Image 1: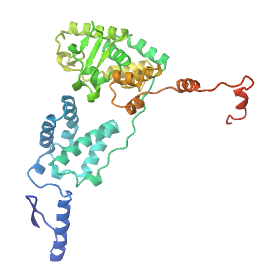
Image 2: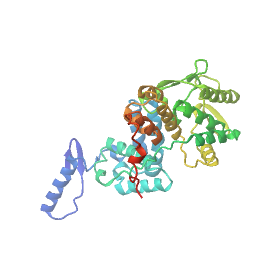
Image 3: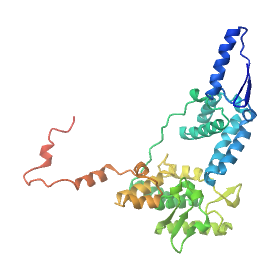
Image 4: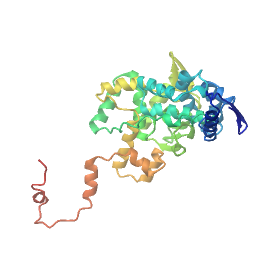
Length: 355
């Protein structure tokens, strides 16, 4: 066949010697092209994934927050490594499934793999290559791990253990700040010295260092948070991290401090710390849940908690808050009407307990 659709020429072999069959196949191909399932055969579709990703991200940079652009560029690394030299038109559903399997084999969570495939989908859509794959590519099932809320004893043990080794100073101070401010890990890592005011006892979370627009906020520091931040700033001064634009958690590569870049994280220190404290599997993000839950239990209004934590809706607040059963029971007990003195609730429940 040799047809032009919307200014694009399609020259494709129909692989038949029968004229009537060729006419039928041509009509099928034209219907696929009209429905966007045949993909583009122009110059853009012949680009490799790496080149297409660069162009796509540069365009996104014009419309997205710097944090989003940085996150997506980081997320594209795995895609470049796997699909880098393959042209967009030659990427198949089978290859995408193979990518998902390879990422899972490395121990990545389903959510992480889905975010990477979602970025690939956006790139392919941009170059009219996704429709031909959409029916055969499925996202991995969502199975997010429920947040863990520590008991008073567990929380005390975590903090006590964190003080036992100087090597855990950064992880300890980050944990104290998360527990006392509700800050996310990404917000802590994106914190600049100019964002910290120990005289006013407050931290400013900028829009480009948080997940959402609602995340930008001013958080007051309580005593524990002030002490932890003072330790971090003292560490910064000793390392020469003194300028307002320097990061409170500066990057360190091969023992060399770069204050103009944020630390990637404290994953190794956090893993050994939590294992030592007998809290294996505790995620750093669980500390944010912990702080929000404790605020919730202390009777603060939803509005106040959302102002501190940066939530955008009560639905998100419900996602993070985990009121224990005893706290719920105590709250509902306030609704009870008084019983006559002669009535004993225990007698009413006799024989009701299941065997």
